[in-house]
Image (cartoon, one colour):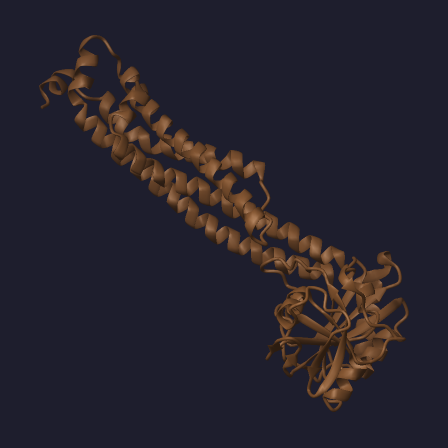
Length: 395
């Protein structure tokens, strides 16, 4: 009976369903996207290894902020080659490499006016654990005039997908491409540099080309033993504080700290958007109440007739509650199906690898049905309390 009643007013039923569908779809989709980004960020950070430390100027109260944008085209005078030697000589540090940025356009087959140029040393690939699309990284035996490209910048500079051995010009100097990294798969909202757009050059060569005016914005270090990483981080911090005359102007962080900051950012965004989606659910519930009130008014004669032949208040109430249940349940199911399809499309056609979270796929429809039933209670009570004589006289 509830289904037949809703089908008799298809347009009104469809518009009412939209509120529930949009609310459920938004909640499920947002939570699945947030969870997927968390998984991507965690995977990217763990690929660097749990024993990786980041040493950077304490320019912000947020640890790891320098890696948010990669400081493309910027530099810092707070970290020097002396700081690099201090970190390298700290007991427990197996390897430490500088990360410095430089400016200047680069010309290959095409010209990129503002590339993300990263000056580093030969130990960099041992720390980031990233595979190569072609070629390899420069080492001590390689000529200093070599570069390694991120996957995206390689496509911008050259027509060839694997431009090994080809030359590019930076500040009047010719460099040879030694390798191209695979896609770093940098997830959205990640607190790491997007090295897909980076051109890696030897630190010594970059110093020579820029006139020794290069500043290090970050030092990446790897501890010898993963279990000793917290102790090594404390030792590095102490050594740098002593080298800077007791000044607390250097921050030493771990990958887990960056993960926590990323999780907080994603969690905040998820909460805000889920809050908006919950408002949509409430609006959908109000729509159900409105439709049910209209339905009660239109079917007043039917209500009077049913009560006249023996229908109880409970039975009349159950009839209209059933209609509210059908509306909210149908909207909830359609919303979950659309959200599931959306997750599949995002995984197939974007860099966001959303993850299906079964808990929210159960909770969101249950909440939607509860909202629908709650807002359907008032019209149902109104119908149940109608006097049968007055209802039969209603035109």
